[in-house]
Image (cartoon, rainbow, N blue to C red):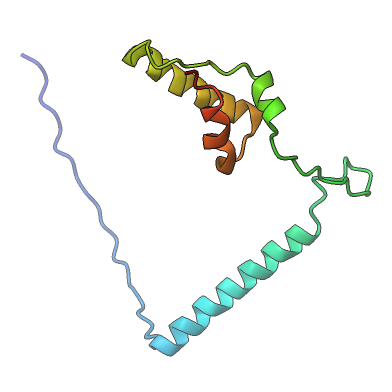
Length: 121
């Protein structure tokens, strides 16, 4: 017969809780103070940001991406679609066009213009 387990005893200590009454105005003032301090800390970190300096202290110029041209689009070798291939080929054409647009960084305003040039009669 296995030995019996001893009963567990629980000891508790008395704790006292102090309640402080805060008005809505005081609460809003504390929240605003915390937000103001957080924003000031963020701005201080942002002004000291040297992520574009290569640790030289001289800020690098940021390159602006140029807009995709039709030649850039064609260099990505989009699929041409005749319209007689069927649904599977049409779906593959859509997927390939999305990939080409993503690779060539083609703007949305040029998607229709460039993709219609890959449709064959």
